[in-house]
Length: 217
Image 1 (cartoon, rainbow, N blue to C red):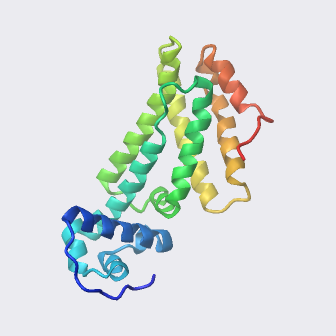
Image 2: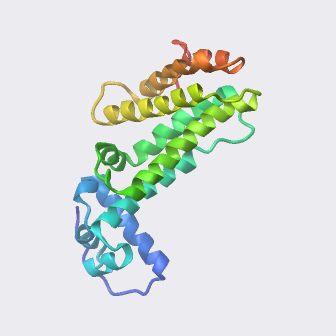
């Protein structure tokens, strides 16, 4: 971390000043992780006083929560799928978006999945909303083709989301796989849903999970 020498004071709108401090916090986490993030480190990086950081974020826990929620919101937006996207293309789109967002906030996700904010109900609730939304999108695809998602399919979909999170966390921790190889591996694992899918969704998933499908460059 490179401390910033305080410059001449410039008056900022509260929303702009908060954004500046949050950007400094995100940069701090990129270098040192969530566990090392405090109002003092944000103040040192941004040239603001520790008291000002406390004013905008309230506490160290709330500061770390805000950074985590920023990454979670980024992921939620990235996972949005155009309504006119063909069903067969949606899983690959979602996986590329998921890995793109996670790697963009790598240190945040490493620490969140490691349990840094496991006792923070607000962060956990936001994570659960994203997970539930991803499951809903997967099972809603079945609804588009006139198939009512069963409890069995919903359970498998939730389990697959957990598998994706755990495998990605392990990959971030150190793996010889490239991102493209990880994406293909996770798409291949969609085969676990096949027993509960009707046609044409079943064939689409089998095509996606079949080895030898062209990998993303």
